Length: 286
Ligand code: SF4
Image (cartoon, rainbow, N blue to C red; front, side, top):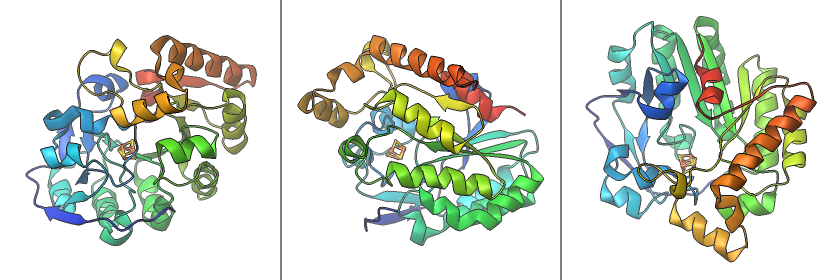
């Protein structure tokens, strides 16, 4: 894992589960769980800081995205009180639960213990952090009690692109090996091509088909011209795109064709590709 020491703060939250709306509700999730505010992976395209107060952020978070994080120190206790058997929970739309600071903070094992004691109907972990492999024991126990699904973000096949747009994330090879390791541990793990960064689509598809026998999930970059309000791609990624002649990859029509092209390639290989809310609905289904 790529590690870097960044400031960690703690705060007492008033609640830990949020009722979903929009994309996640459409996919079938009833609640989301966000253990921290601000994500130290600090991806240049991350849509969360563009949500500002609607993403539960403070101005310092969107101005210094990725430079620190604030944990909800009472998250496990709040969760124990909020869990119900019919909930379909996505963790997390606003932070990676296995961001680098989780290595020392160790909030996820306590969250997983709470889930083991009062399992919801479905629990989904969305991550790109190989640190998740630390918690295999808790994850396996939770999988025995409920539908646990892990979705691993694979954004490109190119290390050069990965270093440009998400320099603090683990390498793509390590993320592919993480999918294999979670699968070997008997967990239901998906390779999720989201958001789609500049890539060689054929190589990307070949890489994920090689490591998993499950459906492939995908989602394009969120782009302002097709989405006038709400979450969208950060300016930092736009600047990188302009400098490196990737502007076309931020074009909505180009991304739609890319998604369709990837779908065709996956289907020609006799497998299934599901994108957008329908794709994430694959994770939510009970
Ligand atoms: S890992 Fe996810 S939440 Fe964290 S900065 Fe990257 S895109 Fe944003």
